[in-house]
Image 1 (spheres, rainbow, N blue to C red):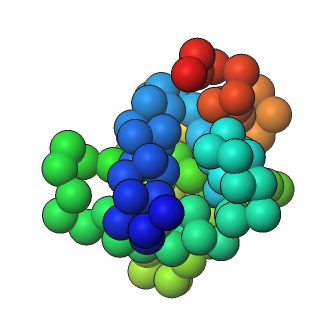
Image 2: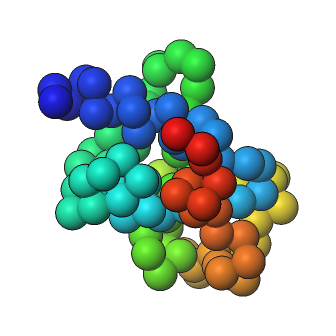
Length: 109
């Protein structure tokens, strides 16, 4: 599978994360059948600029609920998540287990 095709699959999953919920890079990779590709999912999130329809990249965090990536990007993601009702203290999503969205359970593909 080409990177471009993989990224499109990732973007399609991320577009389905409901407002006010988050998922992890690993959960997306597992859902797509490549459970050890969480870093590649992270790389895909780094390529969302200018993609249409837009990809709500802020809703993807690491498996502990931490926002990762460049420092300036983290602040922007915090603001976007706060606007959706997700509380982030420091770089960690609060009440992670309750706001976690698992594509394997939520999507019927």
